[in-house]
Image (cartoon, rainbow, N blue to C red; front, side, top):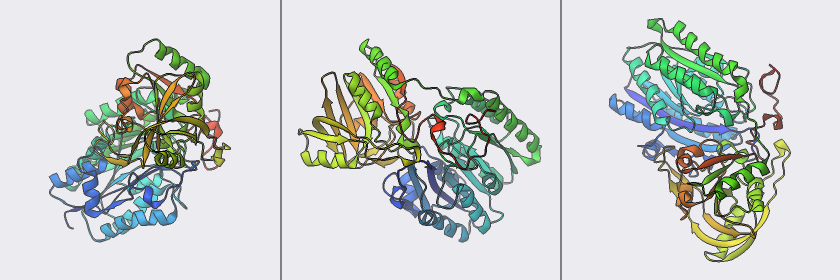
Length: 503
């Protein structure tokens, strides 16, 4: 067997209620997938599991083969044709012969004909190489299936939300795989699943039960009771039979690890179930939230007040053009507010045609219907001056996706002035969750200097924006990332399940 490691990334968080398509070109942060050496180059030195895999492979003296690096921002299910194009290079590399496979996957990918795309990927790799050690790193928002566990050797996942430990999770998986190849350990895994869908707005370890569970997992790893312990609180917007809170634990079979792994797994899930009511998100009316933010900002807060439009977050599959929260902000007359981003290619085209300095009136946002939840797109008419136009090419410098390049498409800043207030709105051709200050800084806005900032995000904004914020106000708008799970017409979930059913 060649000392050759196959390292691949195939990632997508699929919102099965999303109206946003997922074409081939979307895999690659807006620039299509990368292959071979281009894949390795694109992610070298980044905060990603893929980069960690490559670093460990080099330290072990292994030849590195990187058939594909492909990641799309969350959206609807990809086609079977797209999925096959993503998986085929991985299969070809494994067939060519290797010592190990390391996969940077998401864990909530749905494609045409498969509710568990990661399970299919792993099954197909395992079929090619039945005895192959396979290490996988998953996103925190994974819907874990029995097929995934049955076909992997080692599973690790992020322990943070925002996900600032992606490299660390990949490093742990790769180190355990290296130890397995050296025959220092014999990995064994156990997992558990609960009929529980935690609201993503209550997932962060700092906010509720997940903090205690993650602390327990870290302590189990530090004490060497187990090799890796991972909480996976689920992705609520994927309608699959596997959607639900789970945990997976890796231990050393030669050290009696099966018992220890089961005990840690049971303890983790026991906390989640006992405190399940804390995973339910209870919003307040939008007008009250915006009014509360305005009061804080008008009192001269030290730093911007963040208004979080969490129901239309493209980082969970939202259209990122629902104008409900923006409209309320303008109605209440917040002064000195920056808003980002609104995805509206039509508006960007009109702005670019007008040029910097021009005054324009246009229908902004609201171009996307959401039939899965019975919501029609509704633009708002705004008038303002074009301040900046950019190409939208950015590099993340904050703690999340550090060093990764991304593409907003053509982007512009439209300064809208009403009788009551003033807002600078960043309008982009492509959707992007604002978890990094570069979303504003690339187009000349210094977010730390604003009185108010509105972000279409849920929790990831905390990575870049929480350090500069004086206060945070969550705003219940509309969209396919609504924290109220009752708006979704689930058909595939295992029922009963909490909190949709009394349990």
